[in-house]
Image (cartoon, rainbow, N blue to C red; front, top):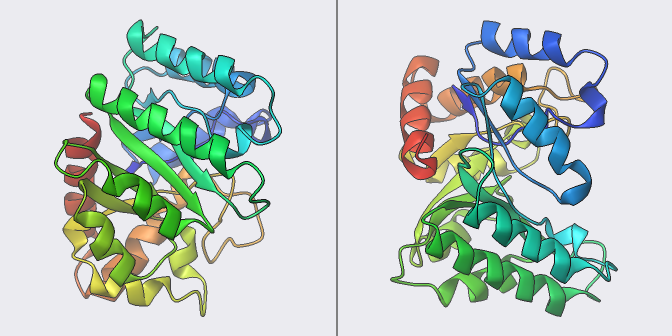
Length: 258
């Protein structure tokens, strides 16, 4: 399995990061993809990727909530472009980028500008995108629709809309959908969405330390727990976990070029 969205470089893992990595390997996780947030945490991400270059693969990107109320967001965006232009190591994607209107609509214009700038960078440097969308799926559909036919590819991380929206998004690029711990939550409804989508359109993720799956819900999430997501997807599609592992790993490798 590949955990396609792991914030294992976050401070929540400072006390036991090495043990967390061991548990991930023991659970059958063969690679972690590390989404970027902003300049405050980026050095930690690169330090981890440098220490484990074959296991932890970093991205470069500016998270939408790091745009909110940030007078320096243009400088942050310039940093992302600089990393893509002269990468300090191999980068597997442009992310975590997107739109997040959950907390406020006040910064939608700025978030949209940053999103489009980073989508253009992904096309320029031939990278996949890891797209965060919260309370903004209609706005996100409008954004990606402008790239139809241009070869955009990537994942809608922590997908949280319905199958109809997924089909609309698929018209505008080579997209897949990141499925994490929420699929194990009772009454989340994500299981019904997953049932409608072909397994080939799904990739596995944790978003650790967040969105911890059952049976560990309420505790810190970690990359080893992606096995619970894999098991749930297998149950929904009535296939083996080995088959889900095979399909989702191949899809993740194709999309991110790892």
